[in-house]
Image (cartoon, rainbow, N blue to C red; front, side, top):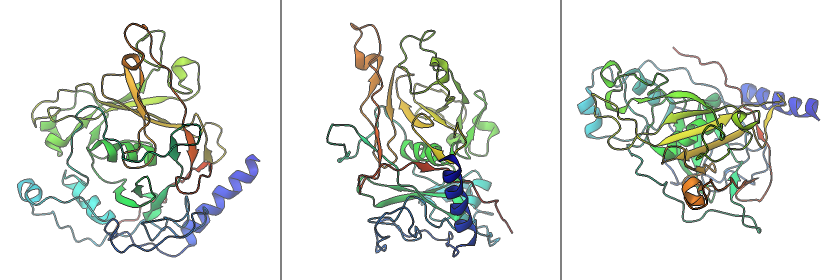
Length: 339
């Protein structure tokens, strides 16, 4: 079985490298005349986004060669943010990052996440974590879907992001932090080209519920006897960074992503992304679609009278539109090619 899965992963890589070139210079506007991708059988073309996006993986294309036309070379940050819109192409995101400019939505966490109006569940009430993944640009771009499978936006591995939905999707897709993030907790906005949009902290999350009894046990956490190493990173509220000083606050993304048995797929206990807005006492799991978050679990949910956190409730891994349980294939990234 392991050999079979590895062969599938290798075939997917070959398809990505040898397949037709997928343009990454201009991403179609969300839900605006976008073609139907097909049946979602895991083998289709993902160059057309929108309703019924085809497949989990398809042809992810190659990383484009940059044109060399840097539109921000002489632009001030004041001019840039005066008429701000998110990046709509890989190249645009790349050049923005070179000058310390954001690529995503300018939005700050305010506490609990905003939930999608429709969060699909199974017949027995488990939330569905979407296994449909839409990569392009040789794995450097990832399209965020809504709960009905429509494209909402595309994020880029070279980009800078601060909005919760985009950062959660970023670490889910790429397993690391955005370009405006510094792993050093004491990094200063005045020393960073990103200024007030700098985010800090990328460190191991222990998951040790004996040492921290108010924290709920996360699935397969190595601090609780499991094998998955979790990491934490800051999500800033409106007062997080004033351009001079960072006040870290209580909002964090905590995630683990590792193909532990090296079989070419992410299985249960190998890929989890959580958000906590009260400093690790309660968590909600990211379900891989816009506004897709599980119900809260943890210490406050359990109630102070109970004296211990409520337990994590697992989610169903499936295709939102077709009800399939599909293992998430590990997508290696094609080497960047720049002019």
